[in-house]
Image (tube, rainbow, N blue to C red; front, top):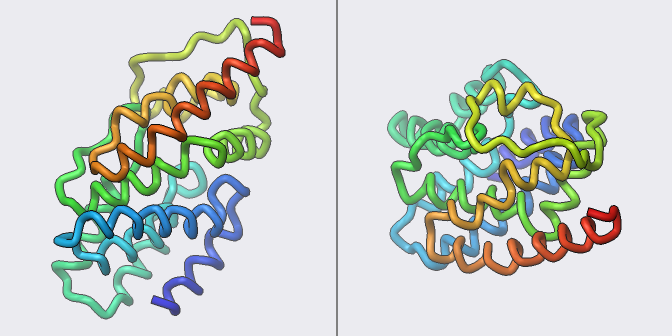
Length: 204
């Protein structure tokens, strides 16, 4: 696991602050917290999937070559390697077009990742990513989309505040583990308070 940590650190430190290695460390801790409440889950699969889940993030690369190479080098069975691939594939929101999380391990990884997209850290990451992509902080005239394809979700350069309404505020109700649901509640409420204050300050 230490070797894999070292390898993925090199990859993630090439990304902007919203998806750097600190993001992976936080998701890892979220996953451990959920694992404590799901003793039947395969902890090894969860930990490896967390470490690898953003290596091939479509926001940064069109290739799965690095992900596949790292999985191929894992000292685990082919069956477990496929389980890890499935967990990774089932993490992404994709504009509301996500794949079904078909195992407890996938549910844990998904919830752990989504917890890092909300609350105070979620707010910070949203504006960090928006800054890296030259997005507006907010756009009073922009309407949040409620129904879109994955390509539409990824291609339109919406403002950072609009992203809250298109994704982040939806995540609380999309959590699938009981621990994830509990952890999401406070973070969701903090985001709502932040947006209320923001609207007050910009005169909306």
